[in-house]
Image 1 (tube, rainbow over the protein chains, first blue to last red):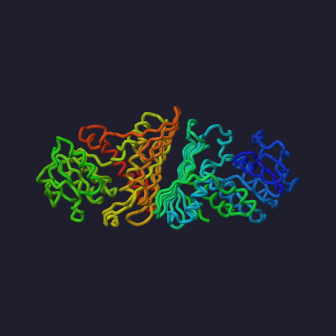
Image 2 (image 1 turned 180 degrees about the vertical axis):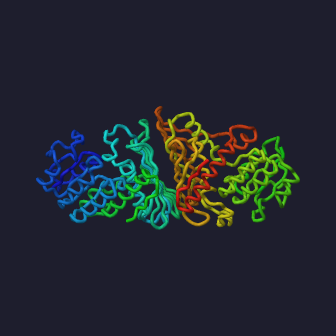
Image 3 (image 1 turned 45 degrees about the horizontal axis):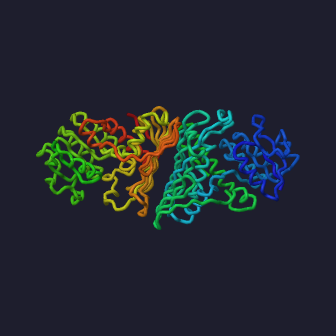
Length: 312
Length: 312
């Protein structure tokens, strides 16, 4: 399987570390997503380097492209790959606007490409197994989900200050919370209201969702985790059902249900990219497009301070 | 100080247990707030019983009335007391509609009564001291607050099923979250969007607020804590500032700031009713009216599925 990598931003290293252990994969080339990208990012120096990813795609004709450029360019580059019939594993969000999302969807469907995005956080062990418990009915019917993404800001590229390149904190960080909400509930988003603080990058945001079948959900997002915090991120989800409550916090699952109170510390989960390449249960293109739409809608709801309908 | 008690609902016992240890207080009489109230509630049998609280007020002419009837009657009974120039310590929420809140405010101002309400939860040790740390600047400028109220439903009176008597889960339970938000931020509410699940009593709800000076806040509320849970309630607040994060959960304070990471388990705080009676820093009538307005606005936002402006 010939694999090319476009862009050295986001979670490209997580994809590469898996690809490197696969015997059937040949890493054939790397190109930055744009000239603005920091090319010194420590990608494998053994990979042939191309200035222009389009030249690379034409010369190598890879089976799969890993797309992880400056965030605002992801949607355009996915289309360049899909239009050539190349399978794509892309950084999320897979588009930066409703219009671009529709273009990406059409390109993927028309090109017949297999498609997946780096919705990695539903595959981290505690979240993966907590969602499974919810699907197994441990807390009854899901009623309300609250999710948290909190990060240290640390040092981030200058282009976080340019909304057209960064895309916004709700789509970049918040989309993981929306991914959990969609995954834990198994429901589609209907509408969202949101508020965010600060210009690009927005430093904090709140989103409140209505989903199908009377499920409600909220996400709180911030970059204010101080340098002294014991970890970079503080990912949480709390899912309230008619028969119990399950939570993920600090990598642990807490479950309260009619059988009692339990704590679990799972240490493994399937690898998203493996599931995708080997035809497992990876997050589907339909889910990815819907969650991306919810994330863009939430950003628009915050920008325009109004409720946004999400639709299909 | 002659004290009468009207109604045996809500947190009346918390007020009584403090009043009983005060040497300057004489508990002169008890009357139910209405005939629908369960009069067998274990109030002190030594207190003279009156069928009609108005007769009691006229006969005894107390200095203070503790008002804790079926929730939907609180506002009317406060007015009956204030109109007679009697000081009032009332269960929250102090009114059930915007119109009634205005009537209560006017009655209190016109009657010249001293007035306080059972916003007890800002006086529980962890919340009290965490708010103090925020006011002392430990986390910089407050940016975002998320608060949680989660209870076992257990067995509750039948009138919880009648909105006109119950008032709604957002004003009854959620008001504590709004009290924390107002207290921790020191800011006024501007607007709210909300969603709730179920008819009276609503079993879960989400509220999202905008406050003055670019503070945002959210509350999640539910009655789905299972019988197996180790405690009746799971009260939490998380307050994100420009220089750190402080949380209250399980009666503990967790503080992350530039000085490091700390945990505190405070075991004492001032008594709200003592502060009120002795002229301390108790929550002011202006605060109570504003927080009650936010709670009613949040219920309206959920009922009407639209954003509500809160105003003064």
